[in-house]
Image (tube, rainbow, N blue to C red; front, side, top):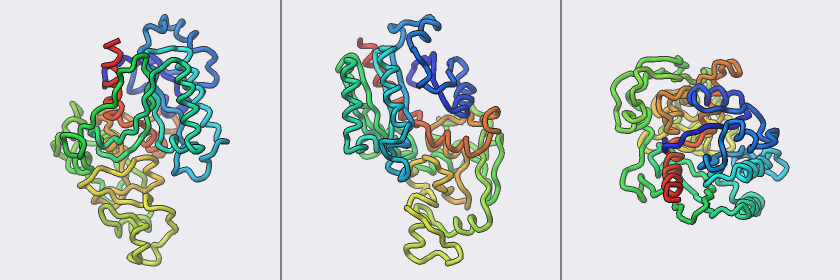
Amino acid sequence: MAGFDIPMGVENSIDAYFVYTFNHRRTMVLLQDIRKIRSFKYILNKMRLNKNDIDVVAGGPPCQGFSIANTKTRNPKNINNKLVSEFIRAVHEISPKAFLMENVMGIASFEGGKFLEQTLSQFDRLGYSLKVLRLNAAEYGVPQNRKRIFIVGTTSDNFKAPTPTHGKNGKKSFVTVGDAIMGDLPPLGNSAVGESIMEYAGEPNSLYQKRIRGTCSRVYDHVTTRNSKKVIERIAHIGPGESLHDLIDKGELPQELVIKVDHKSVYRRLDPTKPSVTVANYRKAMLIHPTENRLLTVREAARLQSFPDNYRFTARYATNGLISHMQQLVGNAVPPLLAKAVGMQLKRVIKRG
């Protein structure tokens, strides 16, 4: 979206591999654990590329070990934490003009800030000028409050954070949940699970919907998890912007529907007048449609992430195409419009040399 050509990617998840290669036919993707790649220079040589051909190395090492929401394995022993060093190795071997690494906000406070400090020190030794960006996707046209850290390294000192375009710091109003998913997508009712291909319910209801639909004539992946009758009854009591935790606290939920809820992000109905809460593993978080008594569909979550409607998540050859894997892929992604905002800034710096 920012105008870069992506010649190669590395992916260890078979679901992500199939979805990415389905949508990006021109990119060669290695389905492999990055730790098993002995030499990136060798791969570049096989592709007849040299380091002068590579402008950017971008990646997002797994974040579970840094996420504050992860109370079980947020610790130095989480093996995925070491994958940051593999990203640093890739940057070192490829020696691009710039690099971009995305992660959760929790990486800044991990080990009292020492982990981020050490990471920046390693990048600094490679000779890059560094910027640490703390960005909220909602400020760049994404209908979702999603705060993430981007570590950007460039060979010059000209890189600046992208200027917010939406909200109090931008010129436009935030894009809301209603702007994103209300009106033109087919209603499913309370217990329906949807279909992989459907017709639109009507014309776009907002500029965002018009943009996200593009030239699509059909809706893809408008599917959700089937819930039990009791879960639907529980959902029905929750109002826009409320969570099950709120109702239990106020004593407004019938006793037979009360369950243990650890935090307020679980069983939350989205408010159509505001940007969404963070769309992570939204099936486990039980994010609820603003008006229907059901969980979000894959397509609705993709729109809240700013994926265009022609981007498909049906992993037909992976894990039997289970919906839970599609849901996880959407929640794991960097919102494209946020990535574009950072990418455009990188492109300007690279062009200046």
